[in-house]
Image 1 (cartoon, rainbow, N blue to C red):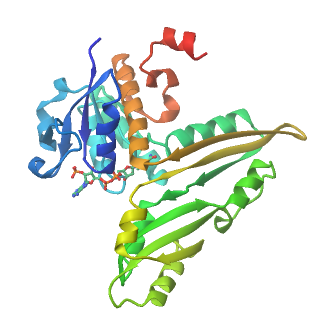
Image 2: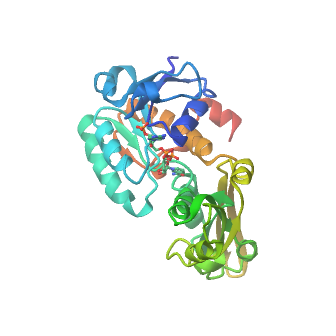
Image 3: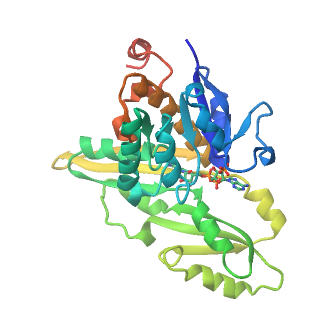
Length: 327
Ligand code: NDP
């Protein structure tokens, strides 16, 4: 059977992750990376990967089965996904939760008009965690749903630290409160405040001559980002930061705790532990790229979210194999 031809749009952390993930998929092949930058300036992880200008896509619809969109949610995907869905079957990882309905509507209009399929908001959250929140609510009608993130590196919070005067470099980890997780697992169904669910750990390299106390105060009082949490700040030097904080780990839990009859407790827990957030997210995108191609081939066009995609479509195995091996 012909392999699925995949293009990567945008080559940052996620784009590199998709390149890596595709190398493990026997039924898929990478056509190339498409970037807004000068292709000659983009160094790929794998030596054989072709890098082309994003404008080259205009003449390539017949050469690509699906585009995996790896731009940022904040400014790239809101524009790129509807635009490219007008010519290609696509998947994205749009993760601005409150703007998903608006993004869906714009992508849906473009994809329906063009007869393409676009699966948006794949990844792990939104994505796999969303599906597990849905399972929990659908199965345990009486209950509470909890999402804990971490221990993981938060890109947004790390960026916020780096914008503070006196900070040369920094990373931030989001850490779930063990006590809160234990109470949820025990079936207590507690009402948890923001402060009770997660703590934040900051590792900061100061600029020369910077006042450590002033930087610490600026961090722990920063509204929205750190003030609502118990935040610890550890100062270290640039070598220690480079040595001990190189990876981009993440993960978390979705827990549904409920009762099927009075006093009969039922708990569903789904956990992810990622050494690399972008490589894991990319692996999810690649599985959804396969599903998007199958939906497109079946004439099922328009925008979809992970809620709309049957799990069997993610697998390289046939429905017959899946029934024999996994049921
Ligand atoms: P990056 O900032 O690494 O990359 C975003 C875009 O910026 C790239 O597509 C690339 O576009 C451009 N870019 C990358 N590196 C450079 C550079 N050196 N100079 C100039 N431009 C550059 O973002 P990530 O890959 O880490 O994340 C992408 C998105 O993934 C996030 O915004 C988030 O929305 C989503 N995500 C979703 C998750 C989920 O579970 N749903 C989990 C994790 C992330 P170009 O090549 O065109 O220049």
